[in-house]
Image (cartoon, rainbow, N blue to C red; front, side, top):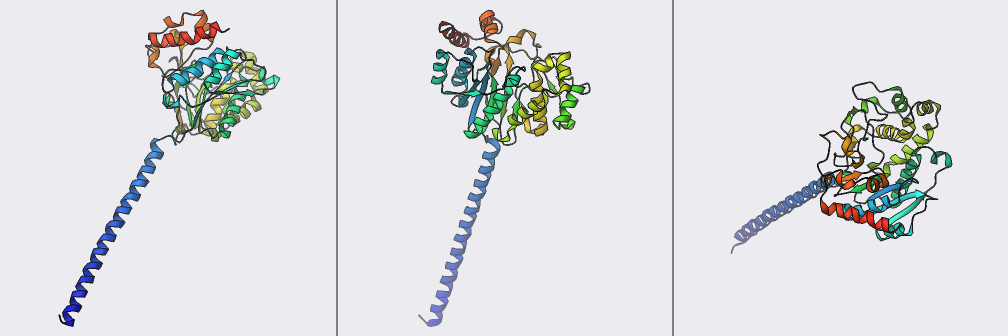
Length: 360
């Protein structure tokens, strides 16, 4: 083989080799780009469709005038029917001087519920439902220490009946709420905001452009935003309960509002909810908060007063329910006959109630 032929052969060989190597490298780069794009798309998808709150806790306050059995019924319902949230942490808050029976304490311990005391001064303790605001602030503080991302704040007269998935906040959601059961001190949406709310909004810097229409749980009124303080889901890092607490402290003894208490005591009873509403509207755009469906916070004690369109056909259709007072609903009334309920669920609730009665 001549030198010219050899050189030509070598040239063609290496050119082919370089071309093949270039093709391989191009293929590898393309594959890597596809992999990177898939990872980015997956990450975005996870962020969009999966909640940021992978650590959830339930919290509630056991007031002095509330039956301790409410705590046990709520905690047992979370563990029994909470679905993916059934093993979440449970925080119970109580006054330092509120005694809980050994029977209930043992039951709460078996359910891995954690109990915390709340310090409330005498003046605040004597004002209607003010202690609940202090307890919510304490719950938020505990949640932050325990790195909780999603705090579900409930009144103790709540029963969980199914996986409460709507409580879980996604990345673009800051608060999940339900409207009040009745209009009470709220304002109808087809009228101007009255002076009570106008002053409240002014003090807490609520932009009236952030107001919107909602329907009361009984279905009888269309009102301006007025949130129920016993059924909320929040992100503790926002410290919305701390803001609620200080807005309450700064305003509840003010002479401007005292004149409303004197005129109608409902203003005192529900002042905490009015302050909560103003605090949420002041800190979040209306697009950052979401209303839970009508399957949440259904008032069993008001079942007969609810509009037919809003009335539940049977208890199993609901996710969470309220009954107001343990004695009034479960002891004095024939509760199982007030709303249709399947025998399995009724037997379970009756069993919890009867256990409590035997251990009094």
